[in-house]
Length: 373
Ligand SMILES: [Zn+2]
Image: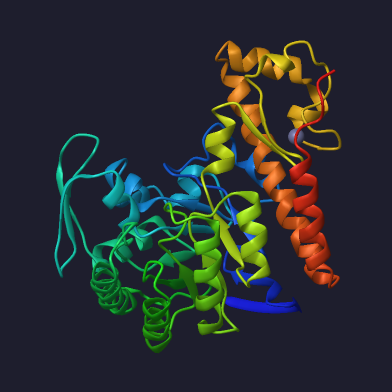
């Protein structure tokens, strides 16, 4: 069981705290993605310095390499990767669908071949929960099938119903531990009726928190917000809500306005390795020649090492020369941007001015990057 306290509401948005055995998560929260027991290009203390209270690790990757039993033998994931704070593990369901080869899905679970070496493996709700326990997750996710997009109403229904039967098996397999929790995942594609049924089914089973899955898969922001408008009110007000795999800064702001408390996305870290930086004035591509002789900081006022110790010209040079430091600095800047984004949202909710803050955010982002020198 994990705690969740809502300290302040502003419209549908909440300023809260999730309490786990390994510490408090200030919400709304963004979780950097540490797929293979590392947030790529970052040391754990650097990740923490960006304002992250919790990271996400991927069950599918870690079960293939190095293996959940080995991680458990070495004292669990927190010790293995030197991250003492909370960790959320996904169920492996999404990535087995997107990465593994020769998948076969039936009532029992998914049989697949590893994308690394072709080994035949099985993932069931019971095995997914066991792996997440071996890893030592503070927040465990129920095993589900991420409904593909697009899907017909019938496809989305049968996929959602399978996920709900798997959610019940996940709950049965989960061993309650003090300060650790299990989240269920709402599915149902872009169909409001299915989303409502899925939410009701999960609430009947009873979870420590509720995630909205199957979004940001190509449906577009308007459809995503519509699903949230219809789904969030069906979730318990006293439990945290997590929008999986989202996302872009504007998506996060819109989802917080609709009552979402937690997010994860590879965007800040992946972009940091492909020369794309996030700033209050939108994204900046450091590969662009306009930065070649520009000594100004990437983002004025940012307190990260990339902005306080280097100029755009140097970052541009690192990116062009494929230097590792470029990925490290830009990843740290991007995570710091996301840390600031969430901090500012929390402060705006706490002072009852979220609507104004969201309008100001959109206005500033629309300005675009500072003009060239
Ligand atoms: Zn910065």
